[in-house]
Image (tube, rainbow, N blue to C red):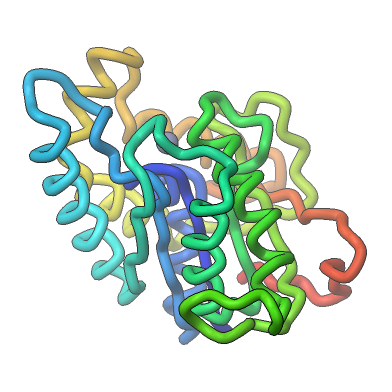
Amino acid sequence: MNVLAIGAHPDDLEILCGGTLAKYAKKGHKVFMAHLCNGNMGGKNITPEELARIRDREAKKSAKLIGAEALGPIAGDLDLYPTKEMRIALIDIIRYAKPDVIITHSVNDYMPDHTITGQLVFDAAFTATLPLYKTKYPAWEKITPIYYMDTMAGFGFEPTHFVDITEFFEIKKQMLLCHESQYKWLSGHHQSDPVKMIERISGFRGFQCGVEYAEAFAMAKLWGRITLENLLP
Ligand SMILES: [Zn+2]
């Protein structure tokens, strides 16, 4: 299978579905890790251009740990809007990756880049299937099932599926630790230690389904995208 995970910023996928992506990769699936925003606002005392370069390197390093291919970005932070231009850029990410399953942000997450990513993926995933809608790559005609990943801290998220990531928690942590530039920033600006955060969230989702660590997902209930098969690993 081809697995396409689409997050807003470099590090979102690691936090919300990194263990699941590592598990897919271990099972031999081809994993694409896309982030739509370049991360250029997640810092202080550095230019946005320099920060974007650092974050691009960090994202590629993390993807490499599980043999995934990093894709994106298509916009700066807080510069992502549900426009035609952005939709086309995302359609080409989908058409390039030819996904059998798509994972993305829930549309009720905590900040606009996340909610707009969820919305754009929904819009682009439909449009990407249409052969007459011309973009750089040919149409990917498969109506691909979409799973929404947990919200940050789990607010307002009702899971339909859980993935046991107990064996993959360490690699999830290693992937997250590739995003070195984010630690100082998150500890100062959001008063949160990212490693503690994933221990708590994955620990809580694990508690809910009876394992040590888990990640939670909600299948998009949409005509044509429902499958009887569980596409999560
Ligand atoms: Zn984010």
